[in-house]
Length: 149
Image (cartoon, rainbow, N blue to C red):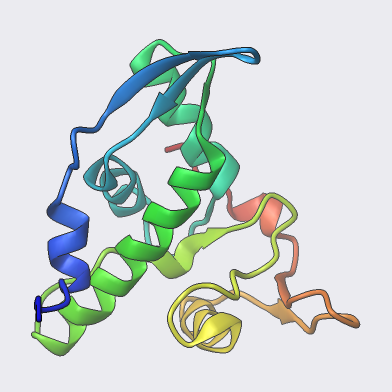
């Protein structure tokens, strides 16, 4: 039976990416996992970036019209999981908790969900508003903290 890859191994496995693909919607960029991780690392303490910003930056840098939202989302999660492995190994992690959705809400798909992301953001001085109904918590006045990536 094959050994399951660690998140770090998945992050470093380019799988023939990046790639640019012509689609009916236009020219789409499909990043490699380390492309996503590199942008996460640019977000400074106390600042935030959105997943939409990451997709737009990836596309712009590649000369494409847009980046694949599905693949980029998967690679955000892989980068977050690799960061958690790095923490366990005593290494400096990529600050994935600083990546929020376009409306400032937290990402339930990150390791330990929005609860852990909220705790880390509060440590950096952010105020977290509780979720309403099925909506996840969000960073209060998140727009003030957005950093270009």
